[in-house]
Length: 172
Image (cartoon, rainbow, N blue to C red; front, side):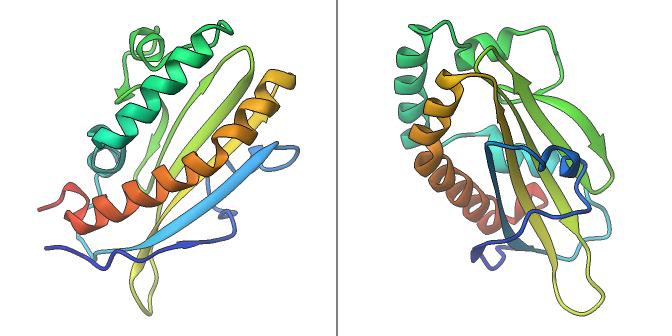
């Protein structure tokens, strides 16, 4: 069943496992979408539906990003896919997984980031899926990088949430 696909910007949730990263972050954003009522929630299936099969336009952006950033000795998406952590969703390492949240992320010489997908259940009204990104920059390269990619990041997160919601978050 396809679900309503309105994605809205929100305050990063205090309940998230990345909340301790908010203080001092160079970049934080959070978006949410209505989540269909389901008896079981498999966060890996949800994360796979959001990030597992990127669109062609996102892959093109990622290719450009990788070509530019490789010149600065920053890990490419290929490097991240092949890095030591075997537990991945696409090229994102799974850092933690809980019944209602999965945390993805990576550490690099220019910045560290965390990405949380959190299902928040409500008594009155639909549950919500939040995607929260938190970035801590280590140097000027990290600050320049996040400034340049922030508009594209927002576009990608919103698009991925819409697409996953329209496809039932992999629970069809």
